Amino acid sequence: VIYLPAGRWDDALTEFQAALMYDPRSAEANYNLALLWERRGDQVRARPYYERFVELAGSQHAELAARVKERLQQFDRRR
Image (cartoon, rainbow, N blue to C red; front, side, top):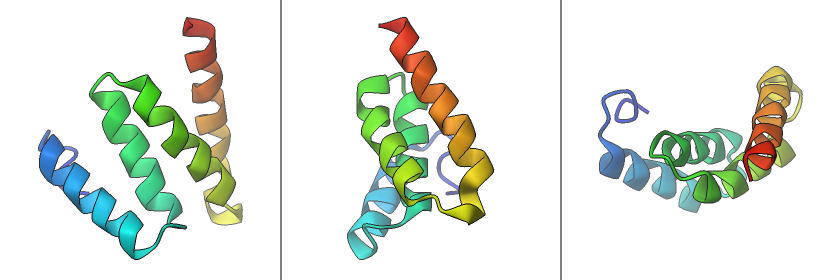
């Protein structure tokens, strides 16, 4: 996660993908991959990770999941 704020995209991508390989049901890894792709300007790649995050979020991430749903609606309006 430290790589993302520093703009070290490739390092962040490697770490988040490794986290998903270790635990494909990781809401956090899915969210972080979505955030990475969105920050790189690629909403097409971000979308499935955001959608998967919403599926996995559970009560501990309910507030963030609601914001992500709103973000996905913004994606739809831009098409």
